[in-house]
Image 1 (cartoon, rainbow, N blue to C red):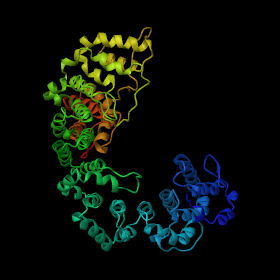
Image 2 (image 1 turned 90 degrees about the horizontal axis):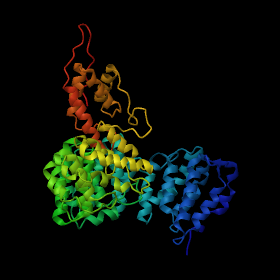
Image 3 (image 1 turned 90 degrees about the vertical axis):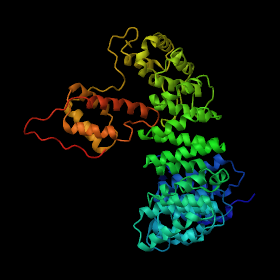
Image 4 (image 1 turned 30 degrees about the vertical axis):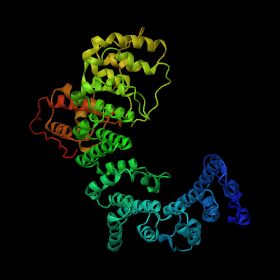
Length: 578
């Protein structure tokens, strides 16, 4: 089996005084490890254990990027290995060269003044490094784009020579991004525009999509204008596999699948919620028509992401999710039921359909719970009494013998027990015995739900104290109410900055308790109430729940009488942005 040992001048490598370069990084790895690691990488072949090779590369990377002197000394030898087709880790080493280049590559990748340190070495090595851009291996050429991905001119030059679609896509996406960041001459800007516009009618549909997305940083209307074309290509079942073979970016080792690209399109459409919701609905409709479950899953995922950020998309998401409740795919039904649960009372027209799913055992591929679990939660959000019998028992059952739940905070996951039960105060009479029994059981076995169940009792106005406790119960992290002036300032700041303020809820409670609003505060709250964004710090279903609670607080505050300041006192300026 061939290796790359003959690629490096090992005598020159060993002639470097690595010992004089000392230790690198907080762990103090000696620079003398560099020759050993380079030899280990050079000896590797396709049968070498991947974990051993990965460890050698990571150690080399840490040494070379952790010290300018060590990286500069090793640079020519890394170039040797990167140029040899027998080197197993060629793309990784090219990535490493791109990282090293950040400190010393000559301007325009061509010429620079011979000086000292990294810049001088790069000036000497660049003619050899440049050969990687014309390498016969597309994977290596794609990695080599990282060497020139901070300037538009060399990317344009590469475009005229590149023929492999997997490199072309990565090149286009980098070109659009960098061209938008650079202060281009009129001529260069026209050249970029000509490349991207010319591809809008290319015979390769994937390149047409790439050209549209690459144009987005330069033209915010590029994606909305191409909506019909993008939809046609992304929903074509024949073209779907093509994306997973050629859609690469410079910052991701693996290719994007068709659904990943569709998600990217929705993200670019998201500033116009009507446009984005229309695109997502069309994905779902086409997925149902052609029997593409992956497309339907994608549509539901994107609908969910829009919903947890923008209240206005609820009208489009509601029929989309309801139409997929009877889908043959378990994952689709799971996500559809979750969306209807998040929508709450708006899903009331579909209560009977949800009730028919209460015993549905279908599961998502990635998330906990069943279709039936989400249908049950949706009915509690609607206020349907059909789910009250055995509700508490069903909610706590999954936590028995569990060591905790694993999930990401941005997943369409099952709700926490407290989030299901807290809003059901009107049904406390029917649920209270089961909650108290569950709490006793959780306390006896030091279970995970003790705090959740106590919070539920507290929210219902019931006694949440455990046997032997005398201190009044206070929810964890519950802050005291601020003074009216502080509360008013918090509301004005939130409205002016448009960012989440953790004190907004307590500020609204304080204003309501105070009993009056000044005109600037009223104007700010009116603007906030009309804003199409979630008032929340969360990225999952809790974004909607917290947003609902805060909007209800805003409504209560706006129902208060207005208080005018005493004569001679000027009002603070009301914010005009949200």
